[in-house]
Length: 194
Ligand SMILES: Cc1cc2nc3c(=O)[nH]c(=O)nc-3n(C[C@H](O)[C@H](O)[C@H](O)COP(=O)(O)O)c2cc1C
Image (cartoon, rainbow, N blue to C red; front, side, top):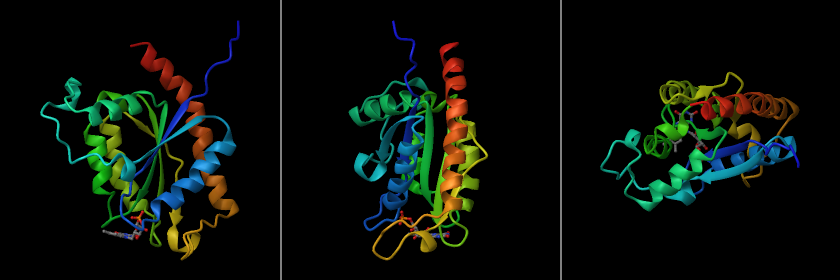
């Protein structure tokens, strides 16, 4: 009998939904980095494709008494995740409204999972949005790791929407993935012990 453990499932959430967005370009670079890292089964939730309505459930999500198929599907997706990466823009010094909406749909599904951030934006590279998001995910019982990727998009995304990385950015992606890979099995055991 094989004792090979399945690789942790990494959920990459693409948090911008704008037509013409840079978000998918940044996400595709990070998804490729995660593929090369080889420590995860990588799954992508692109909020533009998911197209969740503004929260339309009558019951508090902590009850898990979901009435809509899109909520049940989203719940199953996040339930299956062992680690989460938010690929996120900075809008008005915070994170995007579609991301807050997607987070607010669920409660227990986020709990006891490591989370990391790949932010992008102007010269501050989306870091103010990350500062705003950290307490939100912490409140939900996620462990937001210290390592993060911060992309000043004008430096790394061309007008033709090609991603141009550099060794420092690649190293920051690897640091995030290494830390998530280290933590994911421990948090999985923690969830199983409940
Ligand atoms: C509504 C809006 C607000 C923005 N606010 C900020 C901001 O506060 N700080 C910043 O660095 N960039 C800001 N930007 C620039 C974005 O970070 C940049 O356009 C980025 O590409 C947006 O991500 P997206 O293309 O995936 O939507 C803003 C952009 C938009 C559309």
